[in-house]
Image (cartoon, rainbow, N blue to C red; front, side, top):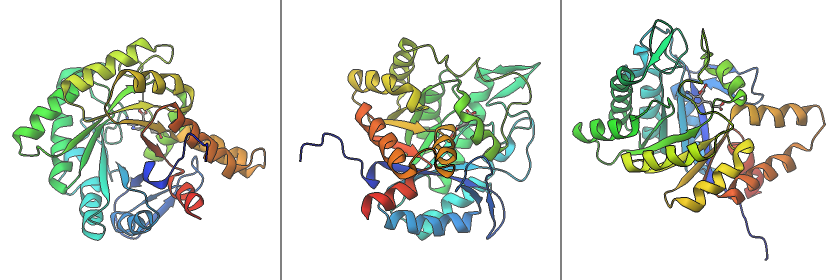
Length: 305
Ligand code: PBG
């Protein structure tokens, strides 16, 4: 009766890793319980997620081959594009969000165009726009740029609008930190940078004011929703953004945060169910409206039982 924060399945978004082919599942070693799946299996999975009350999925693609520009990212029949169509056909009510970033598609693993070991901001924007439009064409409801190039939200909004996709929403990874907690994801997506790191475009974990500035700029450029990522080491950032802005706020409970709980749970160092629900509750209590989490399916089952 007096509980202030209640997490429900409707707060959760389940990320899915899509690889090419049909009826193929490949467990991700660094993320116990999570697998790379094909478009047909993603559609099936969405039937189950929808039944559990999870309103949305966030898709990541692992293409058959990568190149220096990441051209698989805007392929009409690319992994994510095919999965969006399959999911929308099978479960029209499922909200489909797509990650817009080149690092899963580039051979060097960086999130943008690379020239002489430097990631170039502006030339990257054109490629991100091609990618976002191809996702919208396939039927994505939300595009979520995670590249952290400057000016990309305004650029994508303009390009989506002029291509006729005025209703496609933008969920901006606004305050995305250069975090060690993405380690397991890079294993999942085979996207670790081949040289250097992402510190020239992702944020310094020491900065909080900068997060507010990034969020303000993204909202001014047309973001419908903003995000803080990772979540747990950044609960103060979630709270500050919640107190300063009124757009829907998402928090990404990232791969490393998930794998820590799974590893400790499997070794019986922690009670996995209680820990998971406590983590999700703390993220919501900090001010997130939407929690993107690999725990979504399991947690939704626990929460509705
Ligand atoms: C792509 C992207 C990453 C994640 C989401 N989108 C990896 C990165 O920036 O290195 C991480 C998600 C996770 O760790 O769960 N740029």
